[in-house]
Amino acid sequence: MEQSAAGMFSTVNIFSDIRVNYLAVGAGMGKFGHIGFSIKAFDFGDIPLTTVEDMDGSNGRTFSPTFSTIALTYSNKLTSTINVGLTTKLIYESAPRVNGSAVAFDIGLQYKNLAGIEGVSFAVVAKNIGSNLQYKGTGLMRMVTVEGRQEFLRRGATSDQLPASLELGLSYNYKVMEDNTLILSGVFRNNNVQNDGIPLRYGIQLQKFPDAARRLSVHR
Image (cartoon, rainbow, N blue to C red; front, side, top):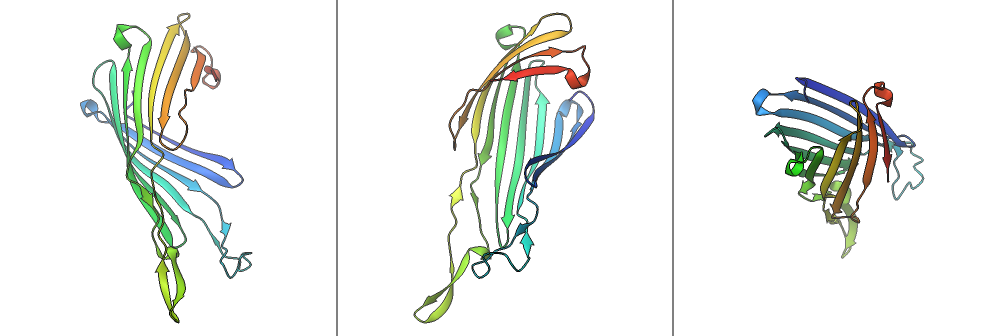
C-alpha cells in the first residue's frame, strides 16, 4: 500500500447457491507500518433440516451453517528490499447445536533484488499455524438406554489440524522495453493435509494498456 488507506469487497459464487464473501480494509500508520482487518464468510443458503425421525425434511425447516474467518494483519517495510507481515486469524464454524473455533497465524517475508541481482525476488510464508479445530455442543449428545434408564451420551468429535502450509517463492522481472515487463515465477508449497506442489507462472505486464487488459498471464 502506497496510499494512506484502502478497502475492498468481493463476492464469489462457487457453485449452486454457495458463495464466498470477503471484506478487507487497511491503513498506513507511518513508520509504524500498516494494519489491516478482514472478514471472509461462506454463504451456504438455506439447507433443509433433516432428522432421524424426518429424513426427508418434510417439516419445512431450514438451517445455514456459519463458516467465517476474522483476521487482523500487521506489515512493515524493514528496509528498501525487505517486507514482513503477520496475520492473526480467528476461525469459527457452526451448524445447528454444534460449533468449533481455532486461532491461527500467517507469517510472511519478501526480499527484493535477492543477492543484489536486479529483478530477482524471494518470499516465504507459513500459513494456518495454530490450534486444532474441534466441534462441541449439544448436537453431539444422544439419548441411550442403560439398564432400563434413558441417559444422554455425549459423542466425542475429532480434533483436526488446520490445513497448514509452508510456501517458498522465487520470481524474476525483466524489462523488455521501457513500459513492458516479462515475469517468471515459481512456488514450492509444502502442505500438511495434501500433496506438495510446485506451481509455475509466467506472463507479460503491459503497462500502457488499459487496466482491464494490463496483465496477461499463463499458468502451468
